[in-house]
Length: 123
Ligand code: AMP
Image (cartoon, rainbow, N blue to C red; front, side):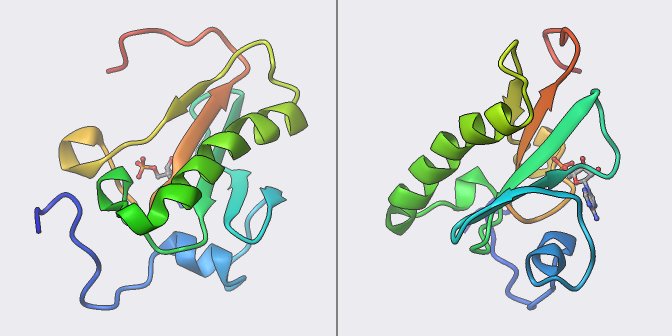
């Protein structure tokens, strides 16, 4: 297994798992049985929401064939969250993956960024 998609074999609990379990607070935008969306604590745009699966998956490289439905559900939920946030004018979806991808929390999350014109390419 590569370093990038290794599971947390040491049983370390991520901050996002604690949010899922209600152990620490978050400003929740949306949730269903499979996923949870909440505002990022350190927003990089006027609107910055994180969409995460409730299942513990490290990042997009950690998806397995068994997660096909979940992966599709996450993508379909992005626009549902965007509509709740009234950001149909445009938004960016980002999934940082691994060290060079800039990932800091080892629980899959989609950044939904909006509220200003976003530059390209990213840094
Ligand atoms: P990444 O660097 O792609 O792994 O993104 C992790 C994101 O999680 C960062 O944008 C952080 O600001 C955000 N974050 C970390 N802790 C919390 C928290 N307790 N509540 C909300 N967002 C958080």
